[in-house]
Length: 632
Image 1 (cartoon, one colour):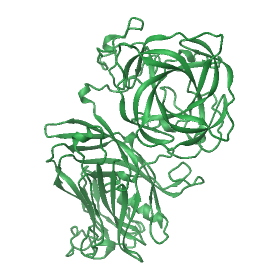
Image 2: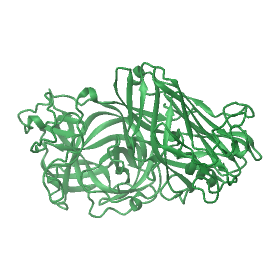
Image 3: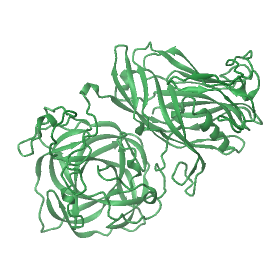
């Protein structure tokens, strides 16, 4: 029965109706104990991944790391002799603010080890006034001393994986750094959304504390010391909660069982003292007057000094496998005033849920069933126009939602759904002053338009069953006749009935802080959780994916079904005649622009959606689905 319920929701209702943002997305790699190394795609060649690093310790009761007394490490600053004391961090390839949605599926990780200089060998001399360029801009830094070695590693959440053979990712020697005196400091970046194989979390990026440079260890990777792709590691403080994870790692130093305790560093691909490409008419990066280098560092060409935006993604020194010049793939922000304000909505709490209102179902009558919702998404708020309206964009890569389970009565199997971004950015608007039209939405269908509307209403009679409607995003919804050859209702208990197109009725006026957004998502039904018993993981059995466009509002969203279950003049609507206990309408809550731009962001913002679904299942009938999300 659960398969039928979800199949109808996915296959018919959600492809045409509103509000499915809140169902949630969990990609196959999120929070799963499956063996990522065996199942993940091979890591792509440069540019280098970003990495989310977690403070990690050897798990209690497992074999301890055996220190390595001597290792030769060569990098661009010289050749050093280190002993390796113990593991300190586990670093997962990461999708930072939607920059690379594929990164969490990459196989190669980094394990970080504490290192010490071998007594009697060469000592590192402080290296000052080095120019650092990453996705967040320019810094002038001093390198103080080496303190970590990062080794390319395999990782699994099930058992010890085999160590990677000839990994693409380099070894890295990590140096403690500081911002050079009398140069601009790093501006902290609040609520940065990071997705990796442990899930998604929001972190405040506080300050840079390590620079990790490509390294040739024991002369096993000659030429690595010339690579220009490095990592700058920023101290982070999690905004969202993190549950410790046990992981199994393997690299050339052996296999280990680690407990990842908490997010610690976010390591971003960077360049150190990049050479300057020849300017072209098609790409000019504005100069940054405040980033003048000192006399001991290479002087950048003034017209090509990157502004503090994400502009460079690859390293620059030439090698056999690395690009000789930076690949400029991102459009720089024209001015500081054009930069949107990013806010993370962490979905959860008692008010975040998806509900089905069912009417006249056999044995159970009128009943409402619900499932909890959780996850997060970034919303970017752009400048305010003369009418007080700000446009909203939500990067597709920032949508990360947890598995959804809707429990049904009488021992029926629950509905299990996984949702992920369809790769299209969310769009919408918020009215900071009020006055915009069409805040509220009623979404309605008629189960039988063979007959004219009854006394309780309905859509126009359509004996040809060819009527159409246009949704708010200008997509077409068409009528469909039930039956064995139908494209909309193959297993219908009402062959011959004409199901109307879905009709959207917009009304109401925006108040201060009211918002509407539209989003495109992909949903999959889970019919079998697989051997690990965890929903939305790689070993599950899924339905074919269904793509939908969702509409959400801070106003009211209402679902209405006429001729419910194919019965003439049987109305499924909010607390109406014949269904006084039915709930088919939900109400959101706005958030003023001043509060959104303030310290608490979108906290307490509430978005809602609704949709009618015909013939959810033969044993249930029609259902009005409502969705509610609240930002915590």
